[in-house]
Length: 316
Image 1 (tube, one colour):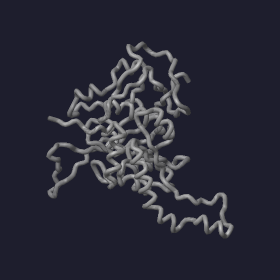
Image 2 (cartoon, one colour):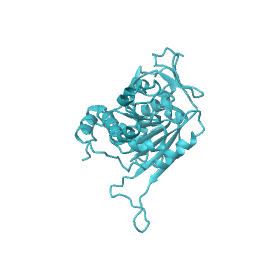
Image 3 (cartoon, helix red, strand yellow):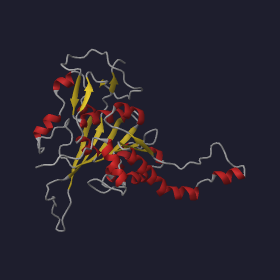
Image 4 (cartoon, helix red, strand yellow):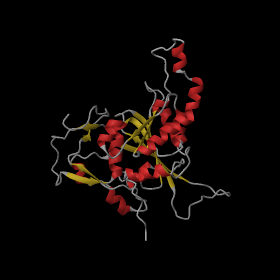
């Protein structure tokens, strides 16, 4: 009999896990598995007026978190967002302990400078660090309050989507706070309940699969052309991009948003993102043959790109 997955959708599960197991742990593959795609995504935004920003979702205790500093000039270009406060504190502590000695050696000592009267108002005395936030990616309020709307050019997702796919379905209000627009301009404030006219729908709320809501919320914080780099164990992770060759077509249908819900104005994630890459990570044996695990479980890299379609707040 198949066992139920752990309660990945509950922060208490992750807090307890990270509190009791403080060793670094990387899901599915090593920390460098997405390096080529991260470089490609950053290269695509190299001519931006401001340096590209990276949002690392579900950072956990992965070595990838510190590894991401290697891709940027300013650590503040990277933000790690995790469901668990334990993971956030762990990551912040790891960064301080890893890079703090280097900063202490080369940085300014406030007491010594003050002793000689050399403290300047604009002198940087704080260690430059990445950002670490406790964020519930399925909570619109949490996303809006902790992330920059339209502010990221690269989203790094190392199996976070897999954990979220195991969470409970989410009940959302109908009509939803946002609707699809034409061209991408990020909203500037928190949502208000809509009074817009929408096609009739039988419910004033509806339960949707969490991956659909994740895609909508990430579309809010991604700039046009931003890339969502996802490592997953699923061959058909995205219900809004049906895979006719997927292993479980019935599950895909169940997780997909119904047409009447989309017709009632609920944002279609398939219009907010396009898939530009789907790659099976195939490990080779000594004789060059593909090595498929006995379980049949394989790992996939997806690259989704944010379209120009914007999300408009209802009532504006």
